[in-house]
Amino acid sequence: MQLFDTHLHLDDTQFDPIRADVVSRADQAGVQKMLAVGTTADSSRATVALAGSFQSVYAAVGIQPNCCAAAENGDWDKVCKLVEEPKVIALGETGLDRYWDDTPFEMQQDYFDRHLRLAQETKLPFIVHMRDCGPDVVLMLAEARQRGPLRGVMHSFTGDADLAAQCLELGLFISFAGMVTFKKSTDLRAVARQIPANRILIETDAPYLSPHPHRAVRPNEPAQIVHTANCIAAERRLSGEEFAKITYQNACDLFDVSSVG
Image (cartoon, rainbow, N blue to C red; front, side, top):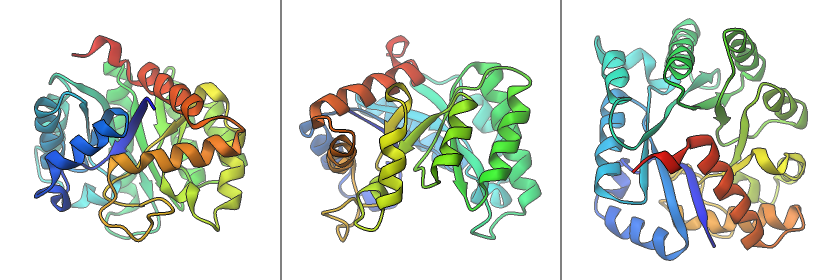
């Protein structure tokens, strides 16, 4: 298979003693490219370093909504500077979250707006985290689109068909992680079945969200994305190889990796 893991946290400390092996296993599984996603200024700097260390790894830089309150003065400026680094192909993860109470919602909105504006300024795609706040995210995205086109992805999507349709109408891609493979995720698999072929992506969100049949295995790692690919492929009546090729090309198109070393 030719696979692209569009979202993982390779800098997570769970990978510290096994990181090189994790990347090697990913390569052996056909994961030709993977996007290491930042959650803080320090995490973003780490993803850039990892992209420089591994040929198959690229970097996304940003401040995750639940981390905004802990951001120090100058952290946003550091993220903006990191955009200039080689192999930075996206901004994020950004977005909104009403499930956790780590950051005041107004602050989350402020940082989300910063990411969206920077994305439109730099022409980099953005990665959206969304939990229990679909209407809020759609509203901010719609406002941002009034300034210009949007290029981004709804990461680890768990919403319904209506929410997916709204995001697609705004020009976004929809990405599915290991949750789509869970036995009780019948409705989510139905949504994955309906996403247009040119707008669907897959990810692991490693070290989290290990897919079935390895749901109990920790940490999750990019090699496991094959299970997510095969699950959605079966729903869409495609072979795993066919679906992997589609999502690989979609990711290359969204993140424009052809122009990155």
